[in-house]
Image (cartoon, rainbow, N blue to C red):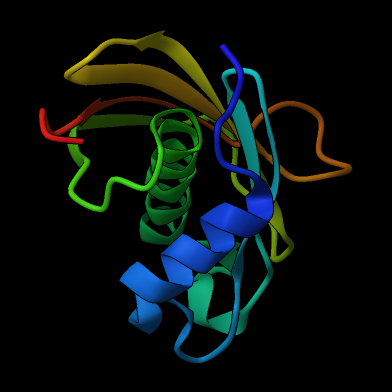
Length: 142
Protein backbone atom coordinates (compact mmCIF):
# COMPACT_ATOMS: atom_id res chain seq x y z
CA UNK A 1 0.00 0.00 0.00
CA UNK A 2 1.52 3.27 -1.14
CA UNK A 3 0.97 6.63 0.54
CA UNK A 4 -1.14 9.16 -1.32
CA UNK A 5 0.08 12.16 0.71
CA UNK A 6 3.69 13.31 0.97
CA UNK A 7 5.37 14.68 4.09
CA UNK A 8 4.90 18.21 2.71
CA UNK A 9 1.18 17.63 2.04
CA UNK A 10 0.69 16.19 5.54
CA UNK A 11 2.50 19.16 7.10
CA UNK A 12 0.34 21.64 5.18
CA UNK A 13 -2.84 19.81 6.16
CA UNK A 14 -1.84 19.58 9.83
CA UNK A 15 -0.92 23.28 9.90
CA UNK A 16 -4.32 24.15 8.43
CA UNK A 17 -6.48 21.74 10.46
CA UNK A 18 -4.58 22.02 13.77
CA UNK A 19 -2.85 25.44 13.90
CA UNK A 20 -2.64 25.23 17.71
CA UNK A 21 -0.44 22.15 17.48
CA UNK A 22 2.82 24.03 17.14
CA UNK A 23 2.25 26.73 19.76
CA UNK A 24 5.51 27.17 21.59
CA UNK A 25 7.56 25.62 18.78
CA UNK A 26 7.45 22.84 16.21
CA UNK A 27 8.44 19.84 18.33
CA UNK A 28 6.55 17.09 16.47
CA UNK A 29 8.06 16.55 13.03
CA UNK A 30 6.92 14.18 10.29
CA UNK A 31 10.21 12.94 8.84
CA UNK A 32 9.12 10.31 6.32
CA UNK A 33 6.18 8.39 4.90
CA UNK A 34 6.43 5.16 2.96
CA UNK A 35 4.34 2.13 2.04
CA UNK A 36 2.28 1.54 5.18
CA UNK A 37 4.65 3.55 7.36
CA UNK A 38 5.40 6.98 8.79
CA UNK A 39 8.35 8.12 10.90
CA UNK A 40 8.00 11.08 13.24
CA UNK A 41 10.27 12.76 15.74
CA UNK A 42 9.53 14.47 19.03
CA UNK A 43 12.28 17.03 19.40
CA UNK A 44 13.65 17.37 22.89
CA UNK A 45 12.16 20.14 25.03
CA UNK A 46 12.17 20.72 28.78
CA UNK A 47 8.38 21.04 28.60
CA UNK A 48 8.14 17.29 27.90
CA UNK A 49 10.15 16.23 30.94
CA UNK A 50 8.75 14.66 34.06
CA UNK A 51 10.39 14.73 37.49
CA UNK A 52 13.59 12.72 37.31
CA UNK A 53 14.56 14.14 33.92
CA UNK A 54 12.86 11.62 31.62
CA UNK A 55 10.46 12.25 28.75
CA UNK A 56 6.92 12.07 30.15
CA UNK A 57 4.40 9.38 29.32
CA UNK A 58 1.82 11.90 28.06
CA UNK A 59 4.39 13.34 25.63
CA UNK A 60 5.13 9.84 24.29
CA UNK A 61 1.41 9.01 24.02
CA UNK A 62 0.83 12.23 22.07
CA UNK A 63 3.70 11.38 19.72
CA UNK A 64 2.33 7.85 19.17
CA UNK A 65 -1.17 9.19 18.46
CA UNK A 66 0.19 11.78 16.03
CA UNK A 67 2.30 9.11 14.30
CA UNK A 68 -0.77 6.87 13.82
CA UNK A 69 -2.82 9.83 12.58
CA UNK A 70 -0.05 10.70 10.10
CA UNK A 71 0.29 7.16 8.73
CA UNK A 72 -3.49 6.82 8.37
CA UNK A 73 -3.90 10.17 6.59
CA UNK A 74 -0.88 9.49 4.39
CA UNK A 75 -2.78 6.47 3.05
CA UNK A 76 -6.42 7.66 3.02
CA UNK A 77 -5.98 11.38 2.35
CA UNK A 78 -6.75 14.51 4.37
CA UNK A 79 -9.59 13.30 6.60
CA UNK A 80 -9.61 15.61 9.63
CA UNK A 81 -12.37 13.63 11.37
CA UNK A 82 -10.48 10.32 11.50
CA UNK A 83 -10.26 9.64 15.25
CA UNK A 84 -8.49 7.38 17.69
CA UNK A 85 -10.76 4.64 19.01
CA UNK A 86 -8.09 2.76 20.94
CA UNK A 87 -4.51 3.39 22.02
CA UNK A 88 -2.54 1.00 24.22
CA UNK A 89 1.01 1.83 25.26
CA UNK A 90 3.68 -0.29 26.90
CA UNK A 91 6.56 1.70 28.36
CA UNK A 92 9.65 -0.48 27.94
CA UNK A 93 12.55 1.61 29.22
CA UNK A 94 13.13 5.01 30.71
CA UNK A 95 13.83 7.58 27.98
CA UNK A 96 16.47 10.18 28.67
CA UNK A 97 16.27 13.89 27.90
CA UNK A 98 16.66 13.56 24.11
CA UNK A 99 14.59 13.28 20.91
CA UNK A 100 12.22 10.34 20.53
CA UNK A 101 11.63 8.74 17.13
CA UNK A 102 8.34 6.97 16.37
CA UNK A 103 7.87 4.50 13.53
CA UNK A 104 4.18 3.90 12.80
CA UNK A 105 3.14 0.90 10.73
CA UNK A 106 -0.31 0.08 9.38
CA UNK A 107 -1.25 -3.52 10.14
CA UNK A 108 -4.68 -3.30 8.51
CA UNK A 109 -6.30 -0.48 6.56
CA UNK A 110 -9.99 -1.03 5.94
CA UNK A 111 -12.78 1.27 4.76
CA UNK A 112 -13.84 2.19 8.32
CA UNK A 113 -10.96 1.16 10.61
CA UNK A 114 -7.18 1.34 10.55
CA UNK A 115 -5.09 -0.75 12.94
CA UNK A 116 -1.41 -0.16 13.49
CA UNK A 117 1.47 -0.14 15.84
CA UNK A 118 4.10 2.41 16.78
CA UNK A 119 7.59 1.60 17.99
CA UNK A 120 9.42 4.42 19.75
CA UNK A 121 13.12 4.70 20.48
CA UNK A 122 15.94 7.11 21.20
CA UNK A 123 19.04 7.06 19.06
CA UNK A 124 21.94 5.57 20.99
CA UNK A 125 19.69 3.70 23.44
CA UNK A 126 19.68 -0.08 23.23
CA UNK A 127 16.12 -1.14 22.38
CA UNK A 128 12.78 0.64 22.13
CA UNK A 129 11.42 2.95 24.85
CA UNK A 130 7.75 2.17 24.11
CA UNK A 131 5.45 0.08 21.94
CA UNK A 132 1.92 1.19 21.02
CA UNK A 133 -1.02 -0.49 19.35
CA UNK A 134 -3.76 1.75 18.06
CA UNK A 135 -7.01 1.75 16.11
CA UNK A 136 -8.42 4.69 14.16
CA UNK A 137 -11.98 5.15 12.96
CA UNK A 138 -12.24 6.56 9.45
CA UNK A 139 -15.46 8.44 8.65
CA UNK A 140 -17.51 6.90 5.82
CA UNK A 141 -17.82 10.08 3.77
CA UNK A 142 -14.18 10.62 3.05
